[in-house]
Image 1 (cartoon, helix red, strand yellow):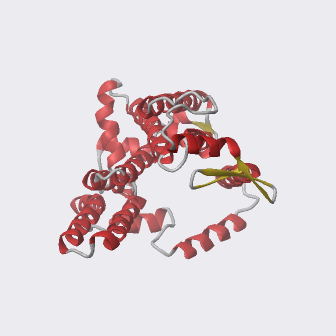
Image 2 (tube, helix red, strand yellow; image 1 turned 45 degrees about the vertical axis):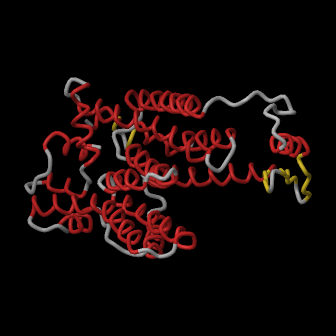
Image 3 (cartoon, one colour; image 1 turned 180 degrees about the vertical axis):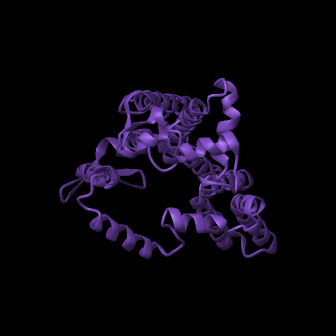
Length: 332
């Protein structure tokens, strides 16, 4: 948190301990600096404001994306699980998580709705927020490959895909350019990461092996519970939710819904009747269910609920959250 606020206040430098800030990407500090105009110059408050606004946007975008594949209830549950995850507390802190997730979700939603250039622009902003943002470039390649059976392999489509992938990587190139302007070497951040954070590029499996080794070797340390306990709790929480949902798994095929209870598949007659009625042209739901609210109203409602929850977490963090003996309010 201190590093991001320091970048927002002073920018990047190549002198003293402040030079280590170069390992942090620039978009979140830049947005925080802009929003400080609305908080009387208080960068900490501006960072919290950015995170809370982006948290509400995350909730709305996640609902929109989930609604493309699930019904309204399933989309609401997806948002609820996201906001109730133990690690969602960081959505209300002066960190990059909320901004990064909102930009990444916006990239996916725009691409799904047929706006690839807008998606590429959001992908570039995501890559300018955190290194993993470049991963969304693969979505453009997948979308291009999916169109080949219908449209064939055309040079214009190939060039368009390459341009969109290049736009996403443009965020990383801008960050490399900042490294070069500050230190004369576009890869200086890799040196700082290795020397001070013990991080270096590697494969997924090597990273997993190092993480497990570190988890075991540090077991019994004073800060082990804080470092690993909450992460293990979050992962266990997700598995418990998935296991609970398996008690009644919905399977839809051709308008027929099956409710799986144990090992017995039972047809959902009410769902079948509704599907038949709608296919016959009857607008009314035979089960008497009220029509759902317009999607825009649902998105606003869910977004407001998510933002309200994040405001509560932000107030809690501001007043009494503790990190290794220091309250968040003391980290400014």
